[in-house]
Amino acid sequence: MDELGGWLAQLRKGTVELLVLWLLVREGELHGYAIVQQLQSLGRLVAGESTVYPVLKRLEADGYVAAKWSEAESGPPRKYYRLTDAGSEFLSAANHEWDALVESMRELKGAGDE
Image (cartoon, rainbow, N blue to C red; front, side, top):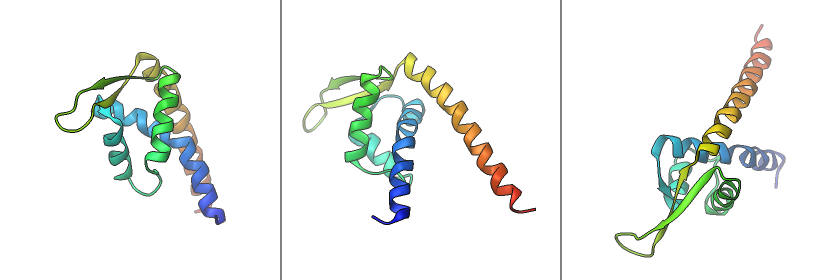
């Protein structure tokens, strides 16, 4: 893997959890594959099922999302995820840190424009 690919993989690991949580805030309850599809539509930063499903499992274990099985209109039952109160609190704190990081990046990038 080239250097940029390795860097992108590390960046992806640190952001997919936040992307999943924000998606659940925006959309409400979603099944896993719908989460994968919507995140993939955001661009190449987000990987597929092999990245998203372990993140969902970790978020559920941490108590940030709750899951329930529901019968599908066609096909097998699907596992639907929703944000919990603990997930909402975590997301609020994490979003504050993310905003601070983005602001720092803007400052550093802007300093080179002078």
